[in-house]
Length: 117
Length: 116
Image 1: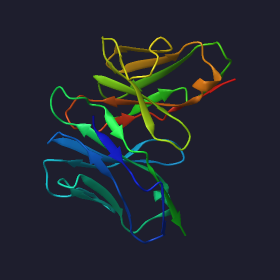
Image 2 (image 1 turned 90 degrees about the vertical axis):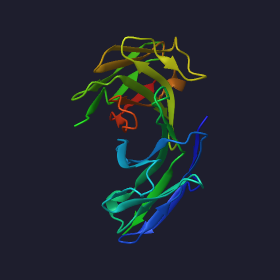
Image 3 (image 1 turned 30 degrees about the horizontal axis):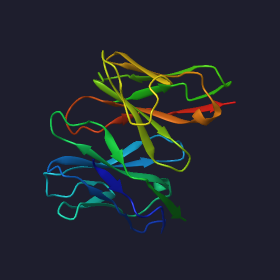
Image 4 (image 1 turned 135 degrees about the vertical axis):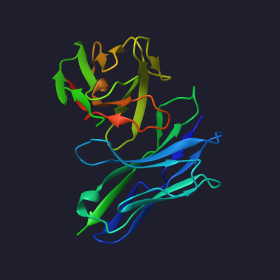
């Protein structure tokens, strides 16, 4: 079974600075998808970024980018120019990609990000 | 696109009663829907996976007779908490898949259930 580990329960960053959230995972599959979701106080789960394991290029979405190291099974999220609205719980998630595999997301325990003005 | 509506947002019920939570995909057909439970300051725990027209698949440790899931159409799944008890109080979130491999799941806003 796949597992996702987020080793940082809490992180803080100054507004306008850069912060990196860590995520590692364990799988025997060669092809899969990785996601970062954000959960603000409203509890709504918001997709931040998505990475396909067969792509070597790291995904980017505006101020959000990932450092995907497949061999190390690492998938960190970098937030640049942090804003107050970035404060939230961030969850790393894994999803199988092969036909017949489970579509379910396996979540890490989350990292609470605080942005200080 | 890809909006998932969950209703109600919050509900308070008395111990012993049943509560139904609805999850609707508003602008797409959801072949698969997932129900998660989230305790305060914790991650999402998958309860069950439901596919339209078939019985739900429950995760280990989840009582299927207590948490009844029905996925009657490609846009609607319901979770019924039967004979609710205070320990069932939690935040329940549904998510829906379009069925495309690797597509992200789209989440509802969640339901805060309080059993008194």
